[in-house]
View (cartoon, helix red, strand yellow):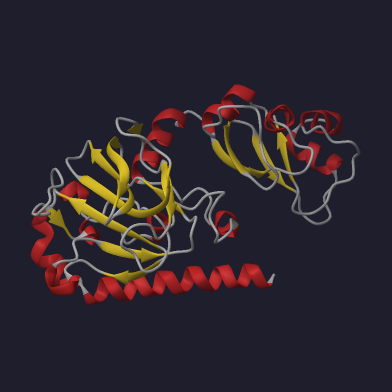
Length: 307
């Protein structure tokens, strides 16, 4: 419980800090909005989660990005679809990854502890490219992040303020969080579905518009994709596709999503399988079989699927 409260405080503090930062820089935004196409203005996800320790244009105008301090190993993701244009070690940038995006931007992710992609590799928005570190000319763990309107050059003449393209919305700020995040996964329980970027939401709607419901399930000890698929009334292949799984391996406490036409019922106090079955026009035996229940004992808050 203490760790949970700490993580909530961290998230709230970060959101407040960024909110104040945006308020204080709203004038410069209004003056430079034309620097980027309208569809990119404050529209992209954040590359990582942490504390903003330096902004664009400081150090006598020689700081061409923003610095996001975070613990070593914090996940860093690409903010949009693109191709890795460079991935190497630099005396100044340290471990650094450059991504050439389809939207015309090139982004730089510097001082990484670890690089996870190679030059020429195709990336999708939100894909992990490395972790926060303090390599190169750095005084502490942080991500130095740059955005260039076109190709990066030594003079950095095409650089723009990253805040012009990074969204103010909390779900975009926290989109990089995943299993490796030192902030934990409690945020997923509060905002599982909304932690998706615009592209991901659009893709979900296009692919799954014919389904009635989106259901989130937490993997418990003993669960397998087969048992979950039976419980949810979907196939294993569908679960793998919807959750971008390359194998049948799932981990306890992971959250999986499923799209289904089945009815999902959350058990209320005082209900029995018989009363629930009667209200849906099915039998208690059918509910037990559909949900792979060992007994007819149910508890409030439990979720069952009813065809």
